[in-house]
Amino acid sequence: MSYLTPLKSDLKLGIILSLLEGRKKLSELGKDTQTRETTILHVLKELEQLELTTKSDGIYQLTPLGILEAHVCRWCCKSFDVLKNYKEFWLSHDVSAIPPSLMSKIGALDGAVLVKTGEVDLQKVHESFISIVTASKFIMGVSPIFHPDYISVFEGIINKNCRVDLIVTSKVLEKIKTYPNHELLEKFLAEDKLGLYVNDSARCALTVTDQYVSLGLFNLSGTYDSSIDLICSEEEALEWGKQLFKQTLDKSTKL
Image 1 (spheres, one colour):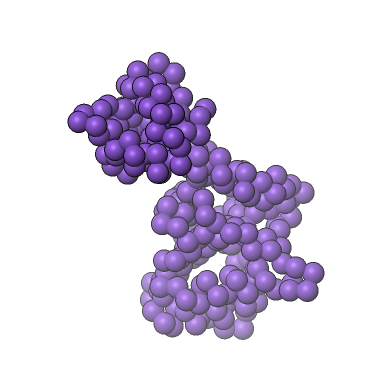
Image 2 (cartoon, rainbow, N blue to C red; image 1 turned 90 degrees about the horizontal axis):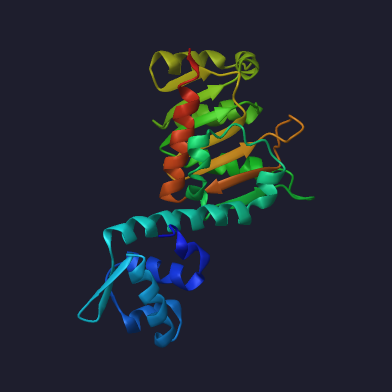
């Protein structure tokens, strides 16, 4: 058989994704796919020959193989959408910070939005970041860049019993040490309210909270692009972000 055949036909794909929700009558499949029942019957025969669907008492359902293939097709579609919808983001940035294992799961970012600075609103990306972290219950961050606001913001949220784990580069760590109240960060470290790690190979700006994942990347020229972030609040995206943080953490040194 030809695997992933449904990806070659919008109707076949629509049918197996509809059946992934549960057993359906022919009329229900027609409604879900907005297609005439006679046309659907022809496709259902093909899917049955591929051993992806079965019929019993006028009810159609996926076979175990069909269930597996439907999940794979669904994931492929989500990945295609992420590549297409955020094409400008991927084309102009260095994606080497994303491990191959997570590149293959890029569909988790489906439903994200691009936050970009404008000609007038130059602080839009920064303000979006501040808004995300100040409303969080925990923060996992990777930061190869430094902004003076970061220290005071993290200080405020830690004081609200928000756990912060932050991976920075050596250069960013040196900037932190020049901050007037950096002793307070040492206090947070001692109290285990803050986890601080160093990774000079970090090539992305990542923020994962209980509600959002935010991803910023370096330009192809090698400079960090502070003008655009990819932000998503979907559950799959949050898990994807946690995995990216964990894989970066595994290569970092704890202070």
